[in-house]
Length: 177
Image (cartoon, rainbow, N blue to C red; front, side, top):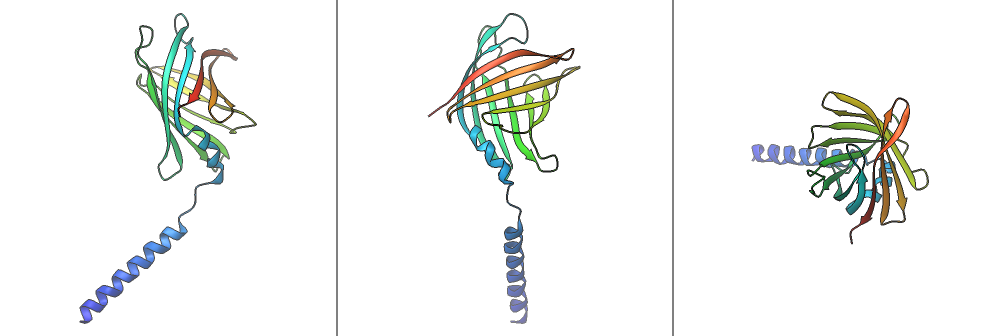
């Protein structure tokens, strides 16, 4: 009986500790709510000007909250065409409380990766800037995102060359219903 009582007390103590830990778990920063805009499925029609002649692109994007509500995980996939071999990647969008900046990370099927930060939406426009790595190259890149209501956005991609920003791509995206 004594063993059973000690066991029951131990179980109750563990349950109380778990409940206390759950109650003290920090809530996601309210700044993250700004990223709700991206959550959902999108279809993007664009133009790639990064290498060779400019050509049309079509991409599908699926974005959802992940990692305990701290990151929007955005999966991007271009449809394969004669000009496009099927570029795809994943972005992680979040908020850095120390810097008070919105941040994102990117990895793709070319082995490239990037990190960037920005101030979030100022009105309808948000800009992220940071280094992108591709093979042995590193360059500064900028993503400019402009909202058009709740269901449309424009995404402009730029690279910095000799202190000047050059547009290398643009997409017009519509939220799928």
